[in-house]
Image (tube, rainbow, N blue to C red; front, side, top):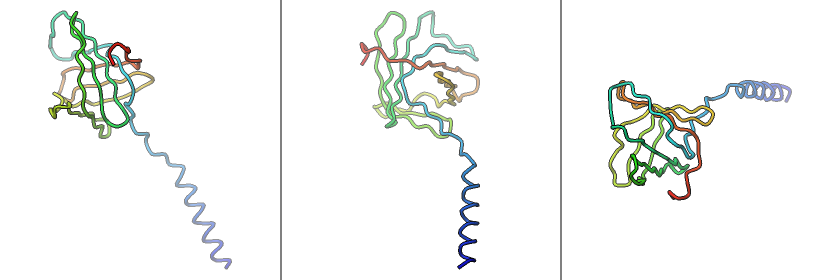
Length: 135
């Protein structure tokens, strides 16, 4: 009986000490984001037009994206997204894959998405509330 009690105590101490190791927190990109900056690391030009982008990454791994170029109107795109470690990929609702996959990071209200193709572009998004006029 004493032996069993000592073994149970030893096992509980071992389990308690293992609980101190924390697993890295999974990256969470869910939320509403507004594009605020594009860092071009390779020569690429879209012209002199202003680009406006809002994206809503939902918990069910779907997204809605609104994009406007210049004085045009917002176009809405929808689909699904997948985040594996820090690599983001997606498909539009018509089944076509995104043109690139992205290495993502998140810090205090900022989401950074860098195209995985070497030296293309990095997109900086800030947390926002998507305008109700777009929904």
